[in-house]
Amino acid sequence: MDSKVICNVRILTMNAGMEIIENGYVRIKNGKIESIGPMDGLRIENASGKVEDLSGMLVMPGFVNTHTHVPMTLLRGYADDLPLHRWLTEYIFPAEVRSMTPEHVRIAARLAFVEMIKSGTTCFNDMYFFEDVIAEEAKAAGIRGVMNESLIDFPTVSFKSVEEGLARSERLIRDWEGDALIHPSVTVHAPYTCSKDTLLKAKRLADKESVLLQIHVAETRKEVEDIKARTGMPPAEYLYSIGLLDSNVIAAHCVWLNEKEAELLAKTGTSVGHCPKSNLKLASGIADTDAYMKAGITVGIGTDGAASNNTLDMVEEMRFAALLPKVVHYDPEAVNAAMALRMATIDGAKALGLGDIIGSLEVGKRADLIAVNMNASNIQPVYNEYSAVVYAMNSKNIRSSMVNGEWVMYNRQILHIDKEQTIENLKNITLKNNE
Image 1 (spheres, rainbow, N blue to C red):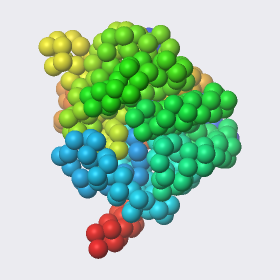
Image 2: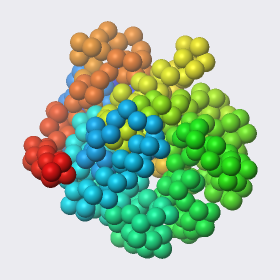
Image 3: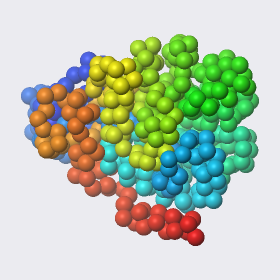
Image 4: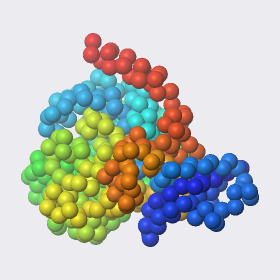
């Protein structure tokens, strides 16, 4: 019986009441939170399992990265300072054909998980190729993942037809059904790269298997113009017209939704995966997340891939997600610190359909959490915990990370991945690709 108690910590629960426990404990049993509360309610002498005194730490839910492409760490810095469609079609797609083998994906995924874990991510949502390999590596690293093959209407490195891609997707769902860490989804690239038939096949599979469907939507003005020219409607309205928007769908980016489209997402329960840094770097625009949330849309935060962001650091991403709406609306109260932290934790979990098991620290939920050194010079003094985390914290302040009740990083040491060997392996790949 796996049991442990973390004690003498300040706790940001991120529960419905946004409860903060000034000096508390978390009791964990078999990967789940068995009890949580102030220290005066804990009798350590009766506590079974290991007791860990983390005095000076703030314990909070780990970050939920709602949109990424894990193996694109291999393409970090490969083609910077370009507009999205040129970047994608002239550089990224060709480089993927040359570079992305199952073994290269495996090594690139390990590097991504090192970066994610060290910056506090405990759950990620991925769409790419050879996702069976990514699932294996995520399981070995101990990190929680939502994932599947990125269906698209042209041959890729992992499948040559949509039907083959669907078959791979179904196989991953079968292979990982009921796993404690791996949550298979269905993924389809975008309405500008996928026919109506492909989009509907993906939606039918997601509905049949009761899993998440993820898709890119309204990332650029060019996408909006192209879809309108083809269908007479902007992207989200078009997807609504064919029945694709739904409560089991997360739409990445959503930079260029109009007011009607935002209402359609809210009406259908479709969530948004907001990727502020990638959208800025590619000059795609700034999603009006403040308006989306006021319309009733659940908005999570994603990093996108390391080729367009160039980091997988959710601490940075969360800060951008808090700052940009203030400039968009010239309103310093737009998306306050507590809202931004909800986007990075519980709202991200809800967007992935995992809000009942992760995203907040509550009895019965999985113990996915991070411990932050609140005595760090860049954080002190602390007048407000949410402001300290969103505006002052950096990823190096995160000392330890736990997923499903098991430490995946302790005192800044990654426990299940050989970081140095992974970096050496990646350098060898990069050299070969440059020959």
